[in-house]
Amino acid sequence: MGVENTVDYITIGSTGNASDFGDLTAAKTGTAACASTTRALVSGGYNASSAEVNVIEYFTIATLGNGTDFGDLLSAHSDGYAGSNKTRALFQADAVINFVTIATLGNGTDFGDCEDGTKSAGASNGHGGLT
Amino acid sequence: MPNYNGVWSLSTHYQNKTDWPNFDRVSRMLRFGGRLTGGSGNDIVDIRFVTISTLGNEADFGDMTGGRSHFGALSNLTRTVVGGGYDGSAFTNVMDYVNPNSAGNSTDFGDLVSARGLTAGLANNTRGVFAGGGGPVDVMEYITIGSTGNTTDFGNLTQGREIMNSGASSTTRGIFFGGNV
Image (cartoon, rainbow over all chains, first blue to last red; front, side, top):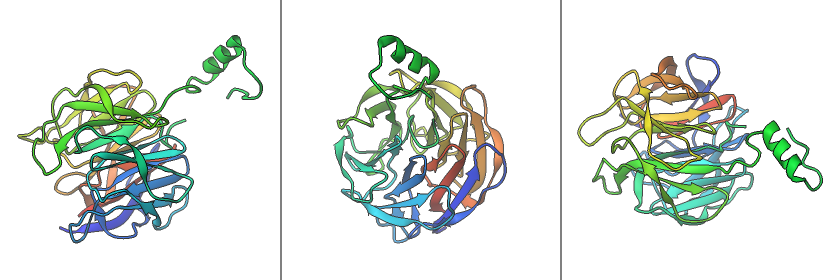
């Protein structure tokens, strides 16, 4: 078993197998992802050395390609959750929720606290796949 | 789509909301269950939320039908669904859902094709897809979010993967990132 940097994509409306989209900037697992209508952001996770990372990277959803550095979380974190509306992305990092403005590269800023710093899953009802 | 120009009368506001039901919807991020950092307690039942446009701490939303961790989550505007996971003793095929706009407990949605955890989810307005999972497996299965029921086969990932945790999506394209192979 190994940690992978591959990124797959599907056309949600059409059943079928996934295709290669590109690569993460490094092999990672346990990341958290969200999107605006045009840009997908991926944060944190474990790298191939099983170390938690604080990297946020982004992809342009309509254009196949590799990830590009966006900025850093306030702390390295894995197995967190993320959510977004059309302009703002949130990422859990330990007991702090980080936010970034999706259109503007930069580091995470304190949004507020998670009650107990859990490793969880989450979703948002305003992300890029919704109109 | 309403015309945003000018100052709206109450009747115009009502008409705009009628023409575009999402025009004043507040986006929320929901967090479901999970486990405590450090690996203990795989059976948290809490659902918590924040309003994405307003800085602040998580607040209570409700409870899952049972405590679970290691599952995938997806959402459209009116339903947020979690699928699979580990209930503290075994992996499960259970899917739960809530209306993210109204705090409350989750309700049974249906079942994944098989019991598994470490999945990832994504969605557009109508369809949600759960992908990968423990094994690792290359399975992708989908639900029609507006209709409760079991999942249906979607296709396969380029290879078996687990712990992708979450996907990201536009209205048409869904993307899954990395993971263990």
